Image (cartoon, rainbow, N blue to C red):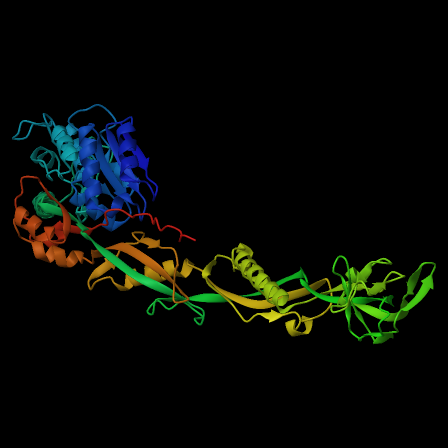
Amino acid sequence: MASIIYLDVDDEITSAAARIRAADADRVAVVMPHGSRVATSRINFRLLARDALTHERRLSVVAADAATRALAASAGLPVFASVSEYEGSLVGFEGTEGAGRRGAGSVGSSAAADSSAAAGGAEGDRAEPDESGAAPGEESDRNLATGRAPLVGRASAAAAAAPTAGATIGAGALGGETVRMVLPAAPRAASSDVHGPSSARFPAATTDRGAARRSLPRTALLVGVAMLALAVLVGGVGAYALLPSATVVVIPREEQIELRFDVKADPSATAPDPGGGIVPAERITLEITSSDTFDATGKRVVETKAKGTVTFQSFDPGGANTIQARSIIATEGRIQFRTTRSITLPAAQIVPEGAGAVIIPTRANVPVEAVKDGEAGNVPSNAITLVPRGENPTLTKVRNADPTEGGSREQFPRILQADIDAALTTLQAVLTEAFARRMEDPSIAPVGATVFPATGALGAVTPTRDPATLLDQEVATFELGLNATGTVLSADPGPVTAIAEERLRSNVGTGREFVEGSSRIEVGEGNVIGGHVSFAVTASAAQVGSLDPAELEALILGKPVEDARQLLASFGEVELTVWPDWVTTVPTLDARVDVQTERRIEVTSTTPSPAP
């Protein structure tokens, strides 16, 4: 019983091997489509053959592609060009396991079947064991398990019956191609009795029996020559399939590229410059305003002098007394008044009265005003009693019959220069604080960019009005404001990573290749130096040598295995296997050596996002 497995183009060797092991028959044929992944390497066929042998499966390969059949044959597997060809090779296997049993893909299957049929009719003819003691069917099974083509032309089958004219002598897998040999048709005479028992095995009797006898040796000679040629061809293909082979996989050694450099953010740049290490920066303009209302601390004071009239009396009968203008008189509380003009008091009169005499004083009124401004000069009547200095208070007296009036004090607010200076200082501090808050607002930056407040610069400050016009204004409060334009730099650190990646690639050495996905890039926080933003960058990546499999193969052909390993070790990690494993030298035939280069692993980038 045989099982046929149809593979898909994308089937891997693991799935193919699993399906072969799961087959419910000991004979299994794998049908491979053109471009099958399994058919990309001779190693895959070897692994399939070894796995099939381990699980007692007799494996054959069916492929329309000649290259696929060649690879499978080189791995020791029987091959067929079509499913029908494979099924034709199974004739004699579906029944009992006997003398007619043979392995799938054995050379000369059709001829052997015909020979067996003929031999079965011959008296006393049967399958005999070969020199090794195995019956023909057993040898075919053994050849199928080992992947070796069986010998062509068993003596018992060839001697049992001569091939009929135009019959196929042999068919099977030879080096990945199906070989059939057809003998030319031998001339035969018309049979006198086509239904006779002998017509199936011998030529019909003719009138010229000598011609018939002569044709038999010639046919036997042709059969012998054909069998010899077929044996040589099968032997050559088998020898090629059994030649030693070597498989080499070299994993190139990785080398690290490490870079440390700074990238400057320049507002004058319009595009990233990897060579110069420059990325564009943007100068953001901010309009800042501060204003407030301030109190005027200065004052203007207006005072008036109190005025009134006083009366002087003279009790001096000895003569007249003159009080000069601007003479100072005062109250008991020392509130002084000044006469506004001069007056003369005549001498007092003595008038006898009874036993004595009475002095009648003379009088004179004079206007006075308070010496000091203000309300303090407003005194009540009879408060002014102190006569000017130099006057005899016994002979001269003074009184104000009426209160003095008109003394006053008024205050008016006024803006001082100190008020203006203090207001400007306060507004400047508020303006600076407002600018700092605006720079911290993330909405002012473009998408993806970072603002660097350390680059902020506040321009010239302009008052909302001329401070000089405020000086000495008699108002209680005044308004004043300041306007200014500030700038700050923002930069997008994203292009810094792209520059680092490009520099890593530009530092790949001669004869080296960049390992994709191996980049490690760290972008530091932007540092402000001299008003410019600079990013510190640490970058690393891997590079590997660019190896040519053909050059590596030429390097080791014919070398001892250990020497070949040492030669290849300078290029990286080496996996060198030979078949059979007892071979100690790499084959000299380049077709028997398969050199491949592989990468260890594709790494995933872990480039961190730049820190804000």
